Length: 75
Image (cartoon, rainbow, N blue to C red; front, side, top):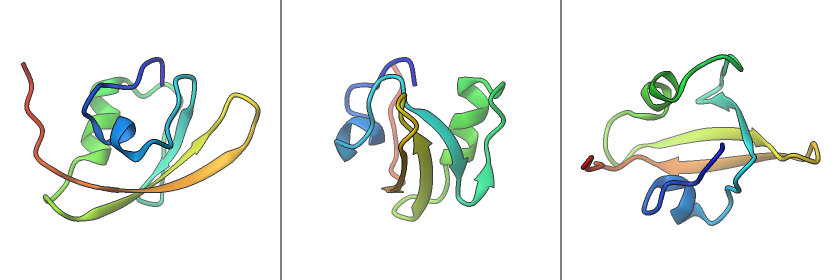
């Protein structure tokens, strides 16, 4: 992730840092060439359901997070 969106799931989790790379969403491998729109589609789902997200830190540490989906507002 190049940036962490204020108010988004990543910021709310307190676990995601700028530079982290998302490698899996809901057990599905994420292609390194996937753009933000495609990644967002993988993460989105029914409100109040959980999705597992696996990311890798710049130093190679792998972390597994669980994000609860919610409605988002775009401005």
